[in-house]
Length: 57
Image (cartoon, rainbow, N blue to C red; front, top):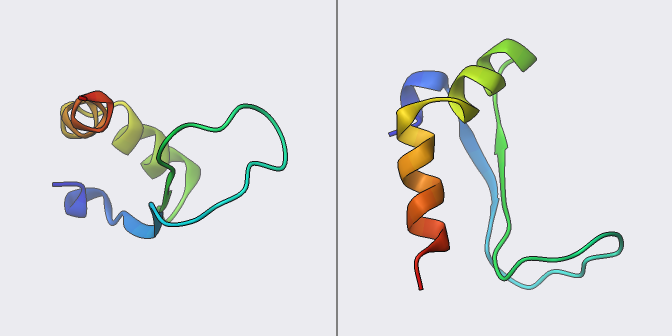
């Protein structure tokens, strides 16, 4: 789904410690080739669907 943006999952779930700020129940870190591509990915309908699934109970 996010492959067209060249996004790579670096972190997806697992054990973590929030050393700053408020933690969520699940953390995901993506890598993109540059800032412009990362913003395009974040603003895409594909990412919106991904976010909606992550928030579902």
